Amino acid sequence: MNTTGTDVLNTLARRYIALWNEPDPALRHALVDELFAPDCAHFTPSREVRGRAGMVARVADAHAQWVAPGKHCFRAVPDADGHHGAVRFHWEMAEVATGLAVSVGFDFLVLDASGLIVSDHQFIDR
Image 1 (cartoon, rainbow, N blue to C red):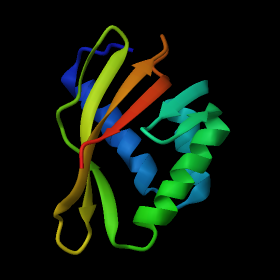
Image 2 (cartoon, rainbow, N blue to C red):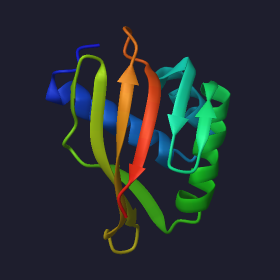
Image 3 (cartoon, rainbow, N blue to C red):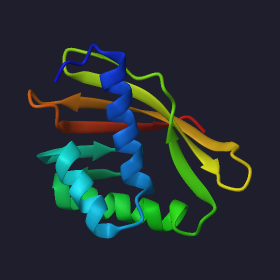
Image 4 (cartoon, rainbow, N blue to C red):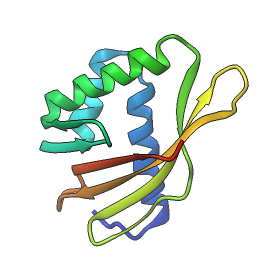
């Protein structure tokens, strides 16, 4: 994947964020398969998840906690940047009622030659 085109990178970021907002478990699973390599890894300050099945479970947990109750949604900030198979972008978790961001952070992705996510390092700024 060309990791230098801003439109391509922002599209990837939007697809990634759509995964976390997706209410249908089957569609979430399909999005994980479309975005992540089979042997992917996802890291947060307190978690380490490996493989697509682990990623499906991770997203389901986050969705159940933050999105399903109807109080929050995730959104990508259109600032994706990348080079040499790496991409970074910021995101926000916003209150549905007000649109105010209550949490912000960024993800640093490493992609394989076909553009699938091999590793995902998530940083939460607040």
